[in-house]
Length: 447
Image 1 (cartoon, rainbow, N blue to C red):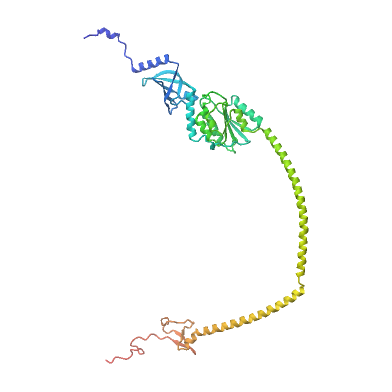
Image 2: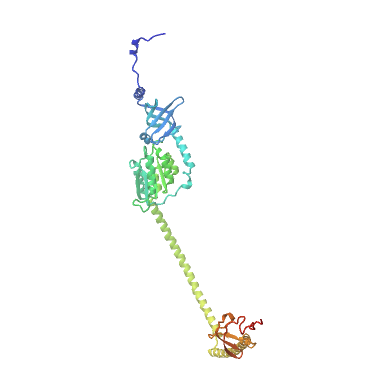
């Protein structure tokens, strides 16, 4: 057993708080590793709703957490994804709340172009599978557009080359929508410009372009990455206005080249595709006009000969026609009868018709008279006078109303009785009940 001397307690250091130790480690790390460049593969990439980007760098043996704040992440020329090998530049610090150290990234660059090309190929396959690059979506370019829209940077030689080339070939009204073509916010601005042009109408104060040119100069794959972002590719594919892609040099390829309606190897070539050469069109028009004049002359000469031929035919036809008319008139003149003959024939016809009419009228009257006699006899057979001859009489009121039933008569009512040979006036007596002096039971009782 051992003992600690009492005076030994004065040699121990004062205890530190957890926070003091944590922040001391943090300060040490930041002083020693204030600037580092670390190469590794991105894993667990996550973009937070705050805009900050969290991830981890790993190699075969170790893992290092990393964070890229919103402002830095927005300036990256490309968006890091899992599996991408990168070089991160920043400083090492710790996170005292969890006793973890991490790299705070100030810049990210692709460790090798192959990694970035891998991301580009995967994105190309994804968008192609959605049909954004299908040939059936391509729209034809107008032959001579009245208004041309250009989406590019106002600085640099690109916009000057396009405007000069258009002026040399066929001057047109050009509307430039200035955008960033590289770095933070470039993809958002390019997509917004394309959508903005499409929202214009032909009645707007700013005229709507009939074709768009999206252009920038050459550069590295990272420099051109904004034109590989999905937001830009989808805006190009959804555009109602035909689009000419002119990004980089002839050997450069971006994803909007596949979505655009036509790809130009250079911005200057885009201007050449947008409009024809005015002088060439004038020459073609002049040649066509000369050919038209020559064809018109040949046609007129041929038509003159044609008309002369038909003129002779018309004269011959006219002679033949009038000869035939004259012969026809002569034939008709022979067949034509003298008016006296026609009048005599008409008189004979009128006489015959008069006789036929008189005979028909007489027959008609006789038939109608016979029919009338038959109807009179039939009417007499149905007359009520025949009924009166059989001993019946007709009972009528003073107004001439005919009574058919005894119940219709009232006591003391005066009626007219019509017999075969004349009328008699009678008065209706009341009904004779049993026991009355004139009734059938008028005999008194024997008891």
